[in-house]
Structures are given as structure tokens and as C-alpha cells.
Length: 328
Ligand code: NDP
Image 1 (cartoon, rainbow, N blue to C red):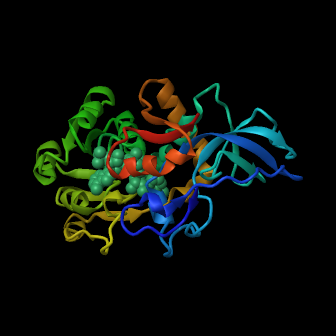
Image 2 (image 1 turned 60 degrees about the vertical axis):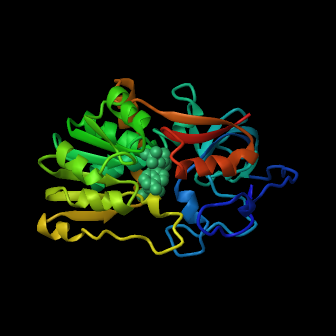
Image 3 (image 1 turned 120 degrees about the horizontal axis):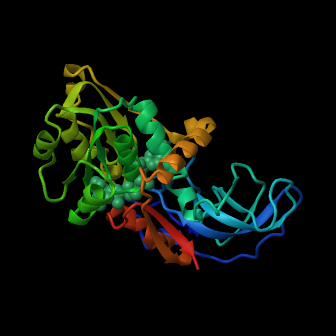
């Protein structure tokens, strides 16, 4: 699946082109593999724009960048054998040839391949370092998470619960809110589509928010800023409500509450924590094993052709937990 045109606003079917080419034989130091499952990430929208960011944009005519899990089918690489399952940034394609850079063998007897793209992969790492390092979470604090029923948000909220915090999730729709409180152990949930978030936060965080973990930006960020406790930390993880904008990103109009509350607002990119992923994965695995973290995954089964429609689900709130495309 190649990028055919730079999208304006929401990504459209015409922005993609699906083609077939013969698979190369893996040369010296390379391996070939078959894609099992592809990760869908909101960040993909940003990779399609030709503007400076933490990664270069996907070029027109290039295979779309994506994390995925593959099964090695042939190898001339010393570290990878046929039958190995490997996670890496292999792109939206059915077959892969790789030199192994950025690739990591995974143990699918411990967790299914999709989980290495979710709770034990990039979203899990994002929740962990965003909350514990950037958010400098302390036991027992009040934490609010937006995008709470998604891949990152659902893990962030459950880590905060494991740390003994009061956790309030913000998500779209009654079903997602019920999931947060009834299944994932959040103390409260706010349906931003049905409620005034600012009023709901006054009710659910009466003593103020110590850590606000923001996945969505826009009006919800603005509402959270009005409820900060003294020395609060606002973690800028993402701003999905702004990614399809054709007008400039909406900045927070309530940012002076940072001054009043002596608070801090800080962004981060998960890749900067790569050296500590192993420790984070160990902690998250332990929480999963102890039943403190429940893994939610939204698996779409199909082919590479289904990638464009599946990506759109993220921006319509149609996923619950980590969204992946499993190839038949
Ligand atoms: P999710 O699984 O949370 O999926 C996206 C969700 O966003 C949707 O399900 C939807 O949930 C919500 N959403 C979509 N549009 C809007 C809107 N206009 N307003 C409010 N909510 C909306 O995705 P991820 O967990 O993978 O990513 C979450 C965030 O984390 C993103 O902003 C992403 O860019 C960021 N991120 C940042 C990283 C970093 O290093 N800083 C790394 C990885 C992710 P609902 O139904 O509740 O609206």
C-alpha cells in the first residue's frame, strides 16, 4: 500500500494506491517474511504531511510506514531463522525483506503477535513513560486520561490504578465509558460526546487534577486545564482531535492556569525511551499477569486493501483498545 497523494484533511481512498510487485530474494544479511498483523496508529496521519516532525514524512509512491509483526520465511541473517516472529517497522505490505534494523524477535507463546503492537509494544511504552517519567506520577494522585478507551489511554489509566491513583477516563460514548469503569477499573468515566467535560471534571476531580494525560488536545485539553491541582503535570502525548485539521491547530486558551497552579506541561516522543523498553515491558507483563492490566485489542481481519478504511476507524472512534489489521 503506497501513498499516492498528500491528504488534505481526512485521508481519502484516492490518497492510496495498492499494487503488486514480485518479492525480492533476501540477499546476504537479510531475511524475508510474511506479515501477520499490522498496527494502525493516529501518528500515521502526521507522517503523511510534508512538514518537519520527529520522523521524515512518507514519500509519495513509498510503501506506507507501519509497525507490524511478521513470520520469517527465509533468512541469510545470523539473528533471524525461518519461523521466528519479529516485530518492526516493516510497512503496509504482505511480504517483507529486511536487514533487521529496528527488528526484534518476540515470543508468541507468551502473548499473541497483536499484543506486541499494543500493550507490550509502542502504545504500552508510551503509556508507561508518559505517565511515570513525563507525568512523574506519585502514588495516590488524581489522574485524568483522555482517549481513555484507546490503545495508549487504556494502559495509562490502568497503570495509574495499579499505582493506587484515583483515575478518571474521558472517552466517546456510553459503551466505552462502561468499559472503563466496569471492566478496566477506572474510578469514573466522562462521555465527552454527551457531557460538558468541564462540569464533569469539577464533579469527578473535586480536589483538582495532579496528572492530565492528554491524547486528544483541543477542547478537552482546555477543559482539563481549568481543573489543575497545584504543581500538576500535563502530559502532551497526542492531539488526535487536531490531526485532520485544515486550519491551524487549536491551542489551549486556558494555559495561564499553568501559571496560577505552578503546573508543568510537557510533550514527549516514546522513541526517546527505547533503551528502557525492556524494563517497561517487564513491568507491564507483570501487571497483566497479576490481573492489574487488562489488554483490549480491536482486531480487523482482512487484507492490505483494508488498510485505508481501517485507519479511518481511529479518527471516528470506532476502535476499542489497540487497533490492528490481521492479514488473512
Ligand atoms: P487510540 O487507540 O486511542 O485511537 C484513537 C481514539 O481517539 C479513537 O478511538 C477515539 O476515541 C479518539 N478520538 C478520535 N477523534 C477524536 C476527537 N476529535 N476528539 C476526541 N477523541 C477523538 O489511539 P492510540 O492509543 O494509538 O493513540 C492515542 C494518542 O497517543 C494519539 O494522539 C497518538 O498520536 C498519541 N501517541 C503518542 C506517542 C508519543 O510518543 N507521544 C506514541 C503513540 C501514540 P473516542 O471514541 O473516545 O473519541
